[in-house]
Length: 242
Image (cartoon, rainbow, N blue to C red; front, side, top):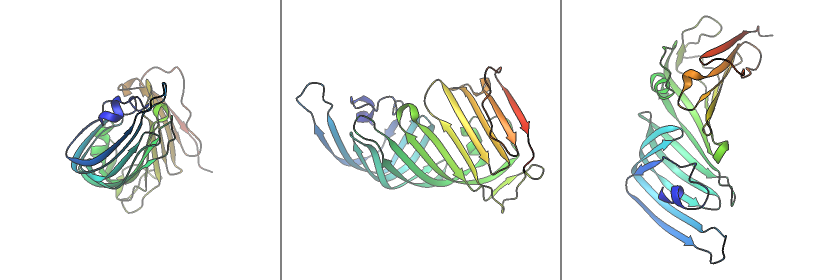
């Protein structure tokens, strides 16, 4: 973690605020060029077991972290056979180094389940929602500087949505849903697609969701982020499916 945060390899802003603890076994290969202006080349292979990782963007803590990892300063962080606990539930994950020298790109793909209450607490949603149950999810976290984002796909099988038809749903039904958010910059952007029944977009200053603005489209149509609205307001556009 110290290498990612302090070495002059372009990863400091992406991994700022991350904290880790626990035992690891690894090997470090460091190639320091003598020519002025060239960056050092760093290659680290390491294994963890029962480690803890706390991320700042998104704010997320993993415990019982186990896996085989590799950091290549010309590509990014990769890993396989990864297991951990997130939101007090087990997850499995893989990490892919999709970058190139001078433009590191790390992509984390994970699968697990999360209780609705845990998720709404994590998103800092205080008002009660007509949703209950456990959400199965596939998560993709892209760490690529200003382009960093989180995307979550779920079938919602096992989730109850207590709303009038056609928006309500029994736990046995399921409905393909996608959640996406940006992770960098002074403003966070959010997108949610709920089957073909609803589309939502929202933007708010980082750490201050109450001052956000957004639009919700029920039925057919894409939500468009409004500009210049006072904090806390949203547009609701009703359209009938074709």
